Length: 50
Image 1 (spheres, rainbow, N blue to C red):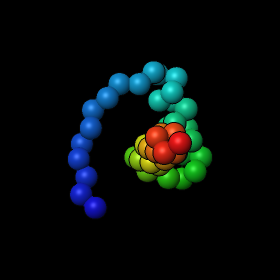
Image 2: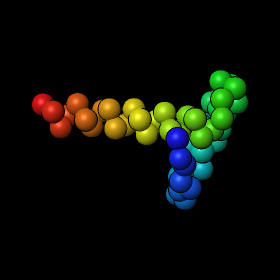
Image 3: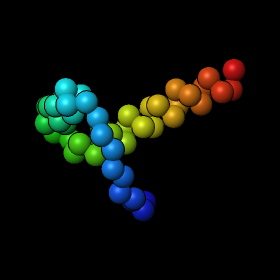
Image 4: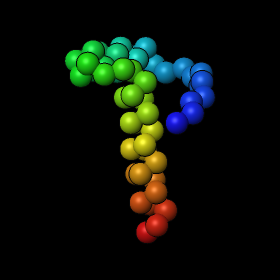
């Protein structure tokens, strides 16, 4: 799948926590970010259909 770069800013504490989680899970940080975006889309998709 093609990828596109994206630049954003997040709170320092949130960045530290997500980096620690990536290390603990032994997964790339980008994988966790993409997973969170997918979960967010699913969350709002369900609300739109109700």
